[in-house]
Image (cartoon, rainbow, N blue to C red; front, top):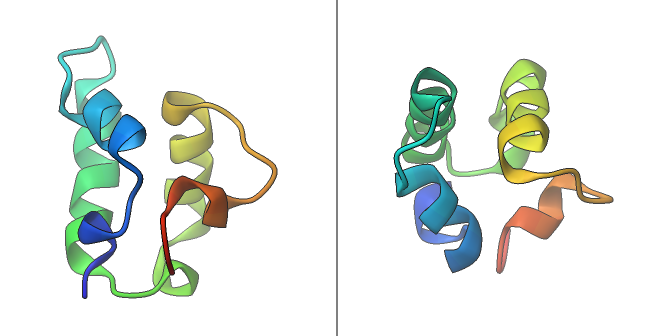
Length: 66
C-alpha cells in the first residue's frame, strides 16, 4: 500500500489545495504515490513536508499507519 493511502486526511487536504507552493506539493504527492514505506522517501522530501505541512515531532506523525 502506497503512502498516499496512509497519510492523515488533514495533510492530504493541504496537498490537494491550491497554494503558492504547488511545485513542492507536487513533489510530496509524487513521493507518496511512489513509495510504500517512509524510510524510502528521500530526506529532502521529508524536509519539504515539514515546510509545507507543518513541523511535527516525527515524520511518522503525518500518517495514520506506516
